[in-house]
Length: 181
Image (cartoon, rainbow, N blue to C red; front, side, top):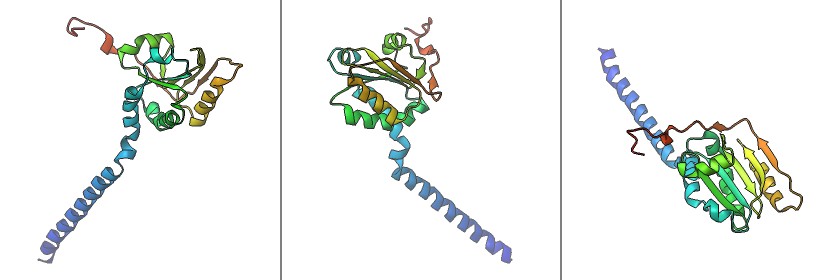
């Protein structure tokens, strides 16, 4: 008889613990949502905040051109650093962000031979390509490359990090009879 009365009490305690745990997870999720989604939000906002590349290459300012994708984990990792650099330099430098999944930017992807992302190309005031940074880069490395844009003696620099996302051929661009494309 005693074990029968303990069973409902045990179930009640288990339910209480489960409810408290779920409440804790929900509150934590709400409280830390900016931390969880900040990188994804930044990547989505990059395209909206971007200067048109044609304007950037013709307005006599250095240009920061990044190729990215919203699904790219390395791009997400770098997004807060790139956003901080944008805030610091946006008065002096054009910031152009091109999503590799948007077929509108296909000519730029081919022109700059993009096959791994993130890829950052830095151009001087005259539109000359000065640096190409491929893969995960430290903020200080990007900042150093930006600071070298105004120096007189310029030589091309390519920095490749093995942490990058490979761009696969996007089948969304393939036209078939049912694609209405």
